[in-house]
Structure formats: C-alpha cells, structure tokens
Image (tube, rainbow, N blue to C red):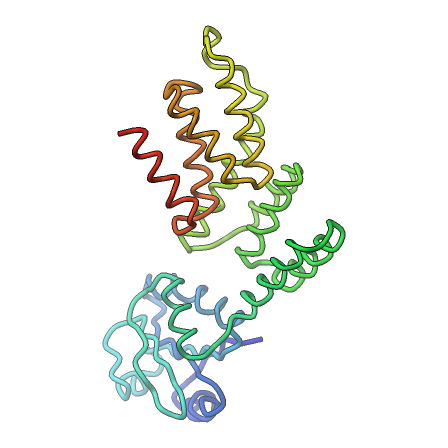
Length: 278
C-alpha cells in the first residue's frame, strides 16, 4: 500500500529522489493557507493508497528554498519524480479522472480497480453466498472507498435491503462529482420503492396500464435491470408527461445518475428522451 509523507528540504533526496529510481514519486507542493490545496490533498492521499505510490507533501512556506529550486510559482503544484528527475505534473486541482489517467501513463496500476474487476467476475458467475463473501472481503480491504461503498449500496438495493443500502450511502464522502452523482442516483432509486406503494396522483386517469408501466420500471431499476427500466419509463414519458408529475422523465434521470454520464445506456436513452420531449 502506498503512503503519504511530509518532506523537508533536508529529507528531499533520501525520501523522494532516491526512491524514484524504484518507482515514480508524486510531490505535492502546497500551502496551509491555500484552499485548493485542501481540496486536492485528500484526493491524492486516497490515490496513493490505491495505486501504491509515495506522495511527498512539501509545505512551501516551511521549505521556500526547495520550492524556489523547482520553480514553484503557485500552489497546489504537483510534480512527478522518476529516475531522480523532477518533472512537471500539473498545477491546480484536476478532476480525479484526469489524475487517474496521468497515473496510468506512469505505469501505475490501481489495486482497487483490479479488485473491483475480480469482484465483477465473481458477481457474474457465482451464487449469492460467494458474492457476499467477496463483497465482505472488498469492504474489509477498502472500508472507506466511495466506489466500494457505492457498489455495496447497489447490491443491497437489488436485494431489496434498502435500509442497509442507505447505511452504506451515508458513509460515502467524496469530492468527485461523478461519485456524488451516482450516490444521489442510488438515493433516488431507493425512493422508487416507496413510489411503487404511493397512490396515483391522478385518480381519474383513464389509462391504468401506465401505472403498470411505471411500477414495472421501478421494479426493474431496483433489480438492476436498467435497460428494461429505462424502456418502461420512456414509454410512460411518451404516454403522459403529467403522470406522477413527470414521473417517467424523472425516473429516467435517476437511472442516468446511477449509471453515469458515459454509460452506453445513458447515452442512448438520454437521446431518445430528448427526442420524446422536444
């Protein structure tokens, strides 16, 4: 597992330059008064654990000569050190996805992504007991990792254990917008279970089959059958925008959040929804 260390000018060669001959080291030049630095710090610390690299944090106010040596003009300023050479990285706060791309280019592999891929294989090919064992192991290894907590919440939603799912969602803390959006989507998905039991907003509706469509979509979404859910909700939106106060469209947006903006189903059905609405 990687680690985060505080480094002074006197320690820089031994703690940063020499280890960089074995694997890349990231140096975070920061300042305690810098707001963006405080946003970037936990992101880098979590990635260091996940990708197994050394994160060396340098306070520029306490190590001004070191900052001047490497031409640090603004913070946060993240440098990459490899083979004893300090190279440019990035200045400011980047989205986590872009930092991950940079780490991949450095040849660093995410142990978390490998563990999630292994779990996905088990989930697709094994029975419930083995899936639970694998999930427990994943949660034990990564008890605070948002991606793992999201996965656990999703699985418990599909099992109908909404209270347990909600507990995992409450544990998620992340500055990543994608993760936050997925968490919001899962919370809204939990609300769909209540929507199934809720009375029809329009008691005079003369097309009772639309309620069956909506309920079918809710059940499919809760079971993880997202394509079927989107298809049913789209039919509701086409039939009657006023039904359950635009319930079809809102439910589709909820599923989009759960899947993420780049998921093929989101791309396909968001286009179809736009064509339906406009």
